[in-house]
Length: 182
Image (cartoon, rainbow, N blue to C red; front, side, top):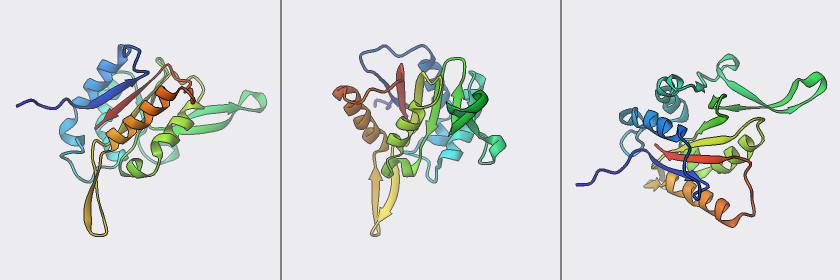
């Protein structure tokens, strides 16, 4: 029996070889599979997933949001104003400053609430962002009208990114985007 790869991931643009950092990143996600595999673990939210990812990603140079208090957030500049002070700033889930990688992790609402598009636009505006690592659930389970529904979040996000990169009508300012399904 063939074991499915974990995590599922795709790198964009698909014509480019994934950079070296992708292998380490994917290994860090794989290292916490038992805690974050959305096909097996119920009740996941983005904060819980980040808490499991934090040790492995911090070990390879990332800063990861530690909570919802201002001191725990990672806020990066978008626009500068008077005296060179950051005037507009956005929060991100994680960052590797040296490599210019921004991390965003979405859970259930990412499956249905256009969070992928929001993350693409907002992180595109952050100063010095070279790459985006975007995590979504492989499967999001919920009920609608009492019936169980399974949303294939990774599949849906991959289709969105495939369309963006194939159409070439919307040019993202990143050197690359890593989509991973947890």
